[in-house]
Length: 289
Image (tube, rainbow, N blue to C red; front, side, top):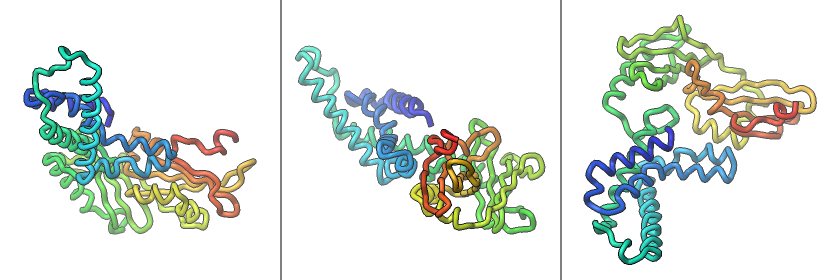
């Protein structure tokens, strides 16, 4: 979800009449509607830490009151600075500042952030839109009614596409494989022939075990719902193995999800982790082949 969407949501909410009740309503709601994304500050600790904490506590019902309080504290500091630096004639407001009321507006705007982030498949699961929930159940039932290569699914998930509320991306896990299938919740129907993709689970090896035990591996597997690994033997200066991680939730046709939300771990011949990171950071074996 783009930050500008959250900012504009807060602005529109404030202009629904809240700005007539207190001064600073628009400023407070605009900032609070985006404040949950302050978790990007974990990026200063590194890309893996940023991935680990993104959409964590600040994107939860428990965190929303704290997000609202931090936002209001920032607005208060701006207000105090403005009152000290402005001339007396210009510092007078047509409306009084009602700080208690502003807190509830900040909380409302903070909750809007969670609601909007729920509309994609990244990981927010705290709120359910009635219509989307109905379509989601229809899509889930369509997948649940099928057998995949004569095997009973052990895990099923369906995830929305952008724009079209009736198109869903289904992911099925059995003991030996994953399969992604497109679903039309209006029917509902599963088109297994035209666009279904099958991913066989790789054999677990000491290399994949070492990669999964790495810092990135633990973080990624804790977040991913349908994780898949691929192992590549490296030649030349960088001997060892490159284990790539992807989550099949994002393997929709044309989405490029694996490139954006995957990662990798480079394991040496001695099974020690030499390098790791999300796909935004390229491994040394690709930068300096």
